Length: 255
Ligand code: SF4
Image 1 (cartoon, rainbow, N blue to C red):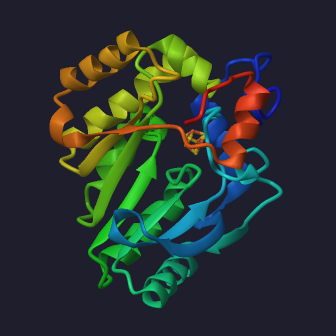
Image 2: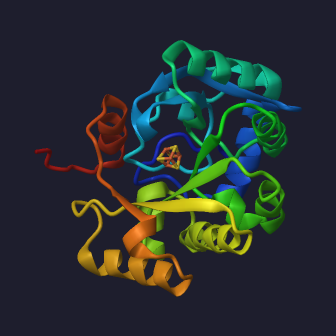
């Protein structure tokens, strides 16, 4: 990779997200340790203890994650799988919640860390572990999904960015052909019988009805039930989102 991509702008050369994942892993992963910025519980999913990971393999202009997404070398601390589990457990006890999650940037970077963490969760008193992902690494390697299928506790939320290759490149900065990866990842999750649902950024201010329809058709073609298994997302005006959109030259009207 010639230059590590930070923020999406009109001059950013489209990048390969799998290659970016590898480059980012060199920064945020060390053996079974992974960088996190924080651990605390939030009210989503009815209350959940969450670890906030550093580093992503996409550069969505509407991303709300703090600047650790763009400058992973400058933010966060390394935590082994067992330190991460202890931090999640502590946050769960402190806030009286029974679910665990890793979120933030892209939690599937650092496969060794994630699998070791899931091993600990599997043996624990906690019943549900939510894994939020853009699906890129699952689509790139079916064996990753197959390895996840030995666990009973994960529920995976795959977040789609686009229905067309052009929309994918415009919103993420990644090469347009990589749009197939998250859809393939969903197919693999289905094949492995893993618990999952799909979230899609179909905000009508950035996605027209034709592209939204294409996205629905792609999901239907892989047997995703749109009525029960799809969550549509809308962009929120977080400070980080507004800064990234300004940099990308995207202007939206806010209600
Ligand atoms: S929105 Fe998600 S996938 Fe996109 S850059 Fe942010 S963390 Fe990565």
